Image 1 (cartoon, rainbow, N blue to C red):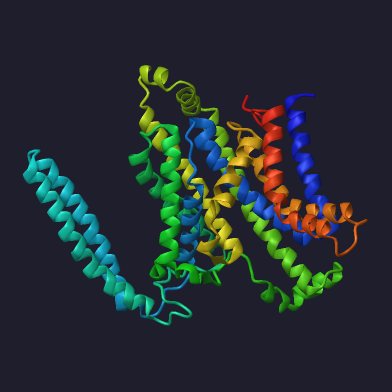
Image 2 (cartoon, rainbow, N blue to C red):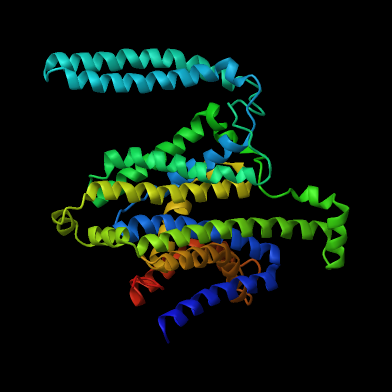
Length: 438
């Protein structure tokens, strides 16, 4: 079997599994898998860019995805009335002061001679600046969070909530993640791969902690709900007589048709984004830049000896891969219609994405896309499949049997068990992934 035919067959198998879900469980469930599969494939593309192209071990994917979600709030939600005048400008002024303070300390340190006097001046400036910063920042935060905290209590956003303009949050999410990646990369990319992993994981946890605790930014754990979206709401379609009539002619109720319509619209938008990013990634892979990145990945010393700036190229691809993860995070938050910082867990937004890349095929963009769909399908379906299997196995046992109760309760752990089994099987029989790098 040729490589092209084999790869096509693998995608066909995954598509067949999703179609089977549509037939057995309903097309609404199948489209949920499709939409999250598209988003997962984009996340996997971003990680594959970093690991497959450059060998960068980034386990802080969760933080970049969360920054994309924050962008959806800042772009789409309306500004909270009175928040800026109450304390918003104080908060922005404090941030401006902090940036100026850091820049001033850096310049001062560069101009002074090394010694005890320079150390005392730098420390004194930083300590005094910290207290000034808190004196500006804290009253502003208290004033903003006091504005109707049950419903708002945060600054709000730009209020771009009209039609497809809502999707502007997706590239903005990429910019947020790219900016954070640049800061992280400037400080951590010189570390060895295992230390880089620890650094990125720690910084991702810091990002999540900020989102959970800074209520003025995005309401913290109280969550932001009712985010605008680029598709019509189901209730709007259900109140449209023309849509209801068309749905009736096709044999659907208004509720069923509106749900399917919205999910199909999302699938179309997400597919366009995935195809654009996949095309760009393929062009990059086969360009001189892509060949240079793989040369750096395979032998940094040799590439450096040939005149390549390894650190600069690592920073470049680290920023690009993180930006793609930020785009995916903004898309997911738009799809959910809410930002819930408490749901960002490393297991879901870092480990699972890495499994997608490894199983699909590190270094191969199509492998990353395949892994995104396949692993997300298994993540969603193995728990109900495990429950069915346990009920089948224990069908001959009495209803009060402790063994039967234990096995049925164990079905909830089928997700983690299956991910481990899939990862081990693929690494044993196809260590380079289902669609390996050519």
